[in-house]
Image (tube, rainbow, N blue to C red; front, side, top):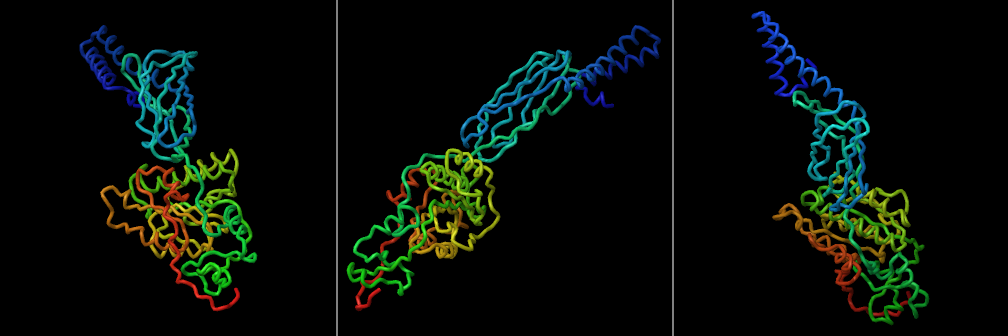
Length: 427
């Protein structure tokens, strides 16, 4: 029965005809008919046996060039099918196993090689979605020269293929707040003159009135508050919001994939500028064990983001300052005003903080009435001194980054504090 299971329709018909001829020869006592019947009966069985042995006489080697590509780029797969036996003849139907995000599954028809021969097959991979994909094994169907039998077999090993997020070239750096914690912020804080070595900045809504520096207020005729000296902490923290509920859009065109691609672009840009880099998710989980810096950091960052899976958490909950005293660049999905407030209060006043706030309704196709407007959250963040931009689908990442760097960016609102009146006190 095992041999019969490998027969094609032609083979089964020939086997049935041979069986019938053999039975008729016995009834009619025709020896010549018996010989024909036995030959017709045994031929498909012999073909099935030979075809079944073919699987042990073929090996497959595969190679991908390059082994890591960005989503949307092209890689080339090379399959080398080598013969290891002496039985030739027949054909092979080969189909490689691919996830649908890598394109259509290629199909080949090739002769079965014998020992010392090989068949080289190539095809292109066109990944549309980032991730660590598994390619293989190769599904092979061996057929004998008469088409009487066939046998299916999985050949070769599986191979890992890394598809990283799409990266665009960025230029410049985000403009700092009045007194950022990064290098530029500290330089500005220490460059003030005529302030008696006291670091001050304009009053912002929510500042404690006890921190008002009255001497500077009288000189500038506007409310000025003291900025406490803080230890300098270098580097930048990039926060990416990967909550599945906070994004909209299908597959590679979703706001989530745009956020991950923009995060990758920012990380590579900051790393190339020689700045220390930390990468966090919306849950505050570090994606990198420590600061990455140098030439090898690009591959580390891209591989990390390629593996990044959406989070099931629905709310943005961070227990402390996610940047831990560093500059912060936050790439955020759908955000309520309350979540924006909780995030803003975690950051010390005067810290250099930027946010890319995605209006996910624009990624929902025909519109999503369930997604609220991002404007209330944007107002809360700007009121806290954050620099906020709200990109649209299709907008180039370089243009979004330029806006975040101050070239057309939507920065903090102008100070709305009342005109100060000096009461003669000394701060």
